[in-house]
Amino acid sequence: MGLATARCLADDGARVAIVARTAADLERATDDLTRRGSPDALGLVADVGDEQRIEQVFAELSERWGNELNILINTAGPDVQGSFDELTDEQWRRAIDQGVMGMVHTVRAALPLLRNAEWARIVNFSAHSTQRQSTVLAAYTAAKAMVNSVSKNLSLLLAPDEILVNVVSPGSVASEALTGWARSIGVDGDDPYRLMDAITEHFGHPAHLPRAGLPDEVGAVAAFLASRRNSYMTGANVNVDGGSDFL
Image 1 (cartoon, one colour):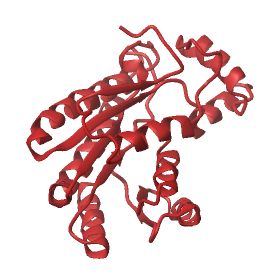
Image 2: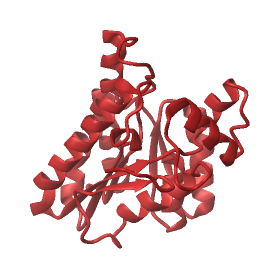
Image 3: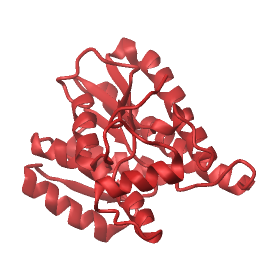
Image 4: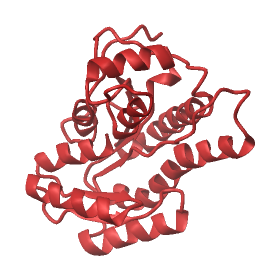
């Protein structure tokens, strides 16, 4: 979903930098972004959990592009599954480090550049499981709930600077991780209808629509929230979930 969002921004002509842990993946992605129309697309190797490296990343961006940044999008999330009575302390810590502290590191490092810009947006990725619980996602959901809380607080803090902060909460989306999981249990993850059936059975998260979502469908919403076209929405949590009965 992060790459899909970057592609949407590149299609709009934005200059896009992406951060990931694997250089080979970054090279392929930046080539694609350049073809789509992103001038000077940039890939930077980093783990968002490494605060010092994240500070270096934004220093590199500042040297390359100048002392302003319009958009920050955080899509990284925890890879921890399990019920409350299964999870170890280490898994709880990993969920929070991956799901929350990475966002904290990037926002902290980016804020001086965002404040220097004429306009700025922050978009953080959460999850629909914060609104409809699944017992097999206890730590994952807790981390995403923290993302919601921190984002809401940031929207209040940064409102005087007119920096808009919003959250995207994807539902059941055919991401690489989810389609890979489906294949591991013998389900065709490339078929969004069969994928939704598996998600409904395993996680208890059906949707009104009979299929899983596609990454591009989430990316388009995130790209709007990150754009100048979004001029008066802040502190919002936007569900991209195919329809649900969230309270």
